[in-house]
Length: 152
Image 1 (cartoon, helix red, strand yellow):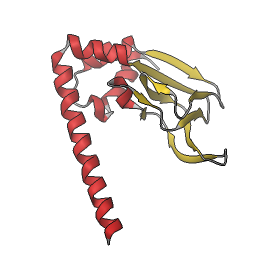
Image 2 (tube, rainbow, N blue to C red):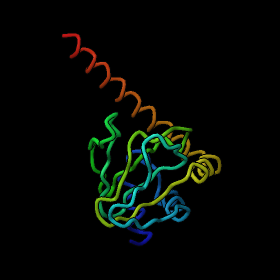
Image 3 (cartoon, rainbow, N blue to C red):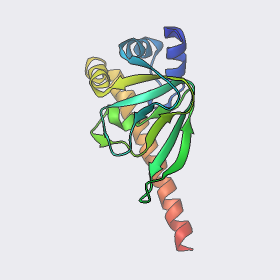
């Protein structure tokens, strides 16, 4: 996958909505790419997170650890998915384990890289803040609706 394809993929992620191709090019160029063999664990539930991962190709199985020691499937990440995006902004832990279901390629966007973009390009910070606010509003709305359903 080339830089042009990476930019197109990043452009489709809501966290980067509104960023120009120039900023996405800088982000893609500064990010690290990793190839994962089938069965490789990218990260484990509970681990400290200092970056987000964007799935470029392949597929990752997402699981949670059950008290019994077994894994509970919680989803799958395919090309165009971003994992633990909040880790680009603040300290957090991984809420699931991500394992390559097939040979896969991912892009690692570190918190250091993302913070540097926010500092050097204020318009990136403004767009990111707007998008996070929108995501938070949607999340609180969904939480309120779920709470209402549980009450009834």
